[in-house]
Image 1: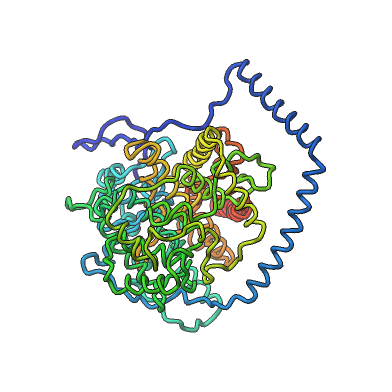
Image 2: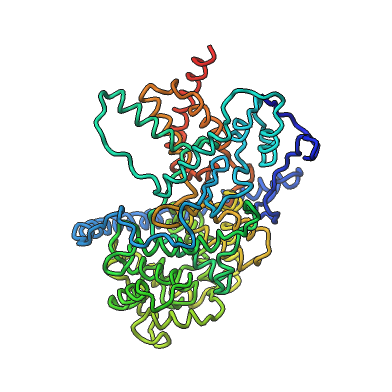
Length: 630
């Protein structure tokens, strides 16, 4: 066995241990305000806080009767709206469609599906096409075990790929122990093939006893465990409005150049010096995924089990065209016919309206106002963005920023063609203001309330006479919220929708070569997952902590944890590496706290469930270690 020690020596032909270094993120200027360091700065912050509290107290003292009346009115309106929504949803006539469907579009011969490989770098999941030289880079624990190391590296001494190869070829004495590197490689390949649908489901057969059934189930579950990181990789997709957001941002940044939209990955080092084809393979598989989840009527649902909607069909049709699918393609023709037969894309819901505005296929006059001044409202105000659900907030902020600057992309021939394809009347003759609240009945699961319509009227009046200096200040505040979320989540962002929006805003403000934008680009692959139907954008960058916690609890429930000590030990380091971290920097006003797990971002409102599952597993692990080493 080889013992790992810290070394500053460089890797050379004599067999000296290579140096250990980790590549850091791209540098950028933080938007997080620096905490006070001097006595005067502390006093100033205390006086400002006291002044704000006093102002707020005086405001409530003189206006509480009005606020109480306003609160009562909102309560009555909310109760009325809930009754209206309930009646509308009880009459909902549209049924779901199957999620599990036959794969209609087969794999491209140019990119065979068996050539896809999964990288699990201590829980970070990324798919690549072809074999990589640095395929296990970042898997600290797994490579240490495979290399036969008795001392695991600490966080400040990361185990990189060169140490993995060096330790295997420079053993002090030959041993008769099994080749863990080969065993782990075989386990990883089975996992990849299972995720790609290359392993058929095991034939169902009756077991002799419940114990046999549990044992077979546990053994199969453990075969799906990643042998390096110790977690259970899995797909976390479903919504069909996620992939278009990524494609729209790529299209704008690349100026419509498909080769620039899907370039080779700069951090990939393929074996035999083969050129990286991951970008083109991703494009082909994303197109195949959308084709496979097209409904029989030619439309797309909002999710894989949804009936065809204007939101799903319009966004995915544009995404297909952006990825190079011609207008006369059979699937594109069917989707376009569905859109036009339902009155055109003028009735797409608000999310779709904003996305189409972003790519220049809709007018900002056709949506109800989303002023960036909403970011200035205090947290106690009912319409404050700080009171919204976390995902609604992080999407509404960049939406309001883009609305405030009336963002429009550069002209492009494809955009001109799409303006004619999406609508039943000439684009320049559409009366956009008449479609602000026009929602297709197939999308309108929750009808627009009278309260929202009243608020929209008031916001329209404000838009006519808004103060320009206040608008500029509001835009900066909105940007600070976006940038802070990027920094706090290490540019993974809270979800894929605001990931694409934040990346676009960063490109608009700071350019393609900025450190912030490069950090965004480096985390795009975290959301993309490959499967039998094709490549899709997931709802998170994974559910590693959840799946690992529940998988271990399932094994413990069968009382079989002591039968598989190596598999049970691997997840413990996964949890250690992904322990909860709370940012030490000050959070911005009305920005909810987000606790970070490397595998998944856990918002404040849901962290209790995740921590409970994690705590139960840690209690089990303590008992396991006590029994094993007694």
